[in-house]
Image (tube, rainbow, N blue to C red; front, top):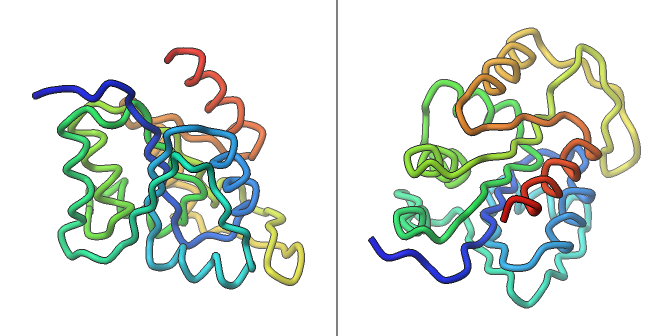
Length: 179
């Protein structure tokens, strides 16, 4: 199968508000990004009144097809890296169990099948956390199952799980250095 000349970043937005605006700032710092927006992420954009001004080279794919048709691009070498940031506990759980029934989970599944490395910013990563909400910071207490799924996810091949915006930024910088 023919490879594309300049592989792109595949960035997945799920329905988490956990450092959502910081994740979008990182998207804006990259060129050649395909942004995969789940239905829940589209709601979060509205709730957080987030500016969606993106670089001209950014392409946006919304969760509008039952078969997640855009993931076929993985078979043609379009992507060098998948970034799922931020990733909800729901998306993490589905990925850990191998469920691929949404655009977000299909992107991760196809990336794995095509051996494309993934960076995942898992939201539920500590027993007690402060997280940004539309009206300000709130305290959350992830469930044990959410914490266990984050740990399981970190054991996946070609998958780097990060738990802070600084770790996400460092992982992207390291990946850039390899390209």
